[in-house]
Image (tube, rainbow, N blue to C red; front, top):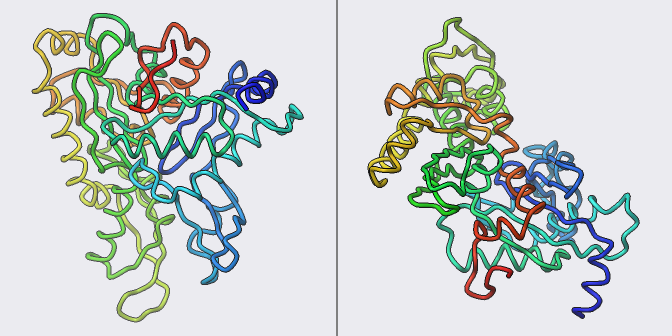
Length: 352
């Protein structure tokens, strides 16, 4: 079996995967990012058949008959539906190899996982990847991958601070000498902010919004800090009193009010992480500043608000949405040099 794996491995392309709650991105060694699709799978409950994966499945969310369920197999960055995650990974691995005519793709895979996940959760990711066709699976913590992707000098004996705000989790980490010195993983991220908007619409306007509508409002006018020019948008949903369709205009100030509590919890965790960090590293971070990555980094004015409350410079990484997968790709291109940043599971020690 090992010989077969190695034989097919010669014709396979090594890949890095950012297995996100909202989106899955795939990096192919030597080619760059080739897939960026939503982490959504549509399943026919009667036959257990997967009908669609990625963008096609996302279009079905909230629009399916009772026997078809379009759902995310990852919740808060952790696998919640093992079999569906496995099928999703297999789909992405096969999609990468479609053009190369590899019959049995057996690639080496580097996958980003949230920091602080349990051994069982790590094992679930490794098993899902192996069952989906991976020859070898390496795990890397998402904040570490994001820092590498943002080109922070993670192997230097100096402190770097990354705040990776994804769909399901926000990872706050202080990194030095290729390891995470202090970190926090919290369940307040992009999805939670969309939920805040749904709750606000319900409380203020008696309006029931769908997830996609709330996300569109967040992207179009969401902010964490007062804007120079006010923004407005309309949102459509169902009136909770009459049960009929209803349209409401909402301003950036109202959306900011809806998001304020979650944003403040996020900033409090950034401050708490700094408080627990050794003073030598705090001095480095004060000089270098805090780097924001992930989709949540694009929330207008968030960098300003964090900078104001922490009294430290804050910058947004280049193309923050792809930082984690680019980090996985950089590790993949140079596994020997960067093997120290990989996570070891109890079942399998890091490669030598």
